[in-house]
Length: 100
Image (cartoon, rainbow, N blue to C red; front, side, top):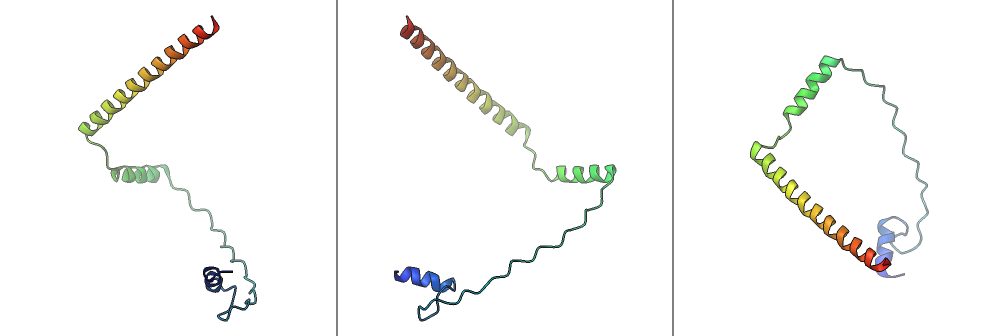
């Protein structure tokens, strides 16, 4: 057993300062928290007020940001579609060549 392992065991309380094994203290399991009572149901108008308040906290994108992100998505979609079309064509031609 090297020094690092002895130090780690000492920090964990498994050995004493002189290196002898410490008596294992039995740990009591942590007490379970008492079950919480079910919360009161909110009324529909109260729920809608809370939803409206939460929606006001959202940082909505501007019109220009939405347009920019949409353009990026459409360009990426076109590139991926072209790549799949190209690969599908190449593999189709290859399989026809292979089985003829």
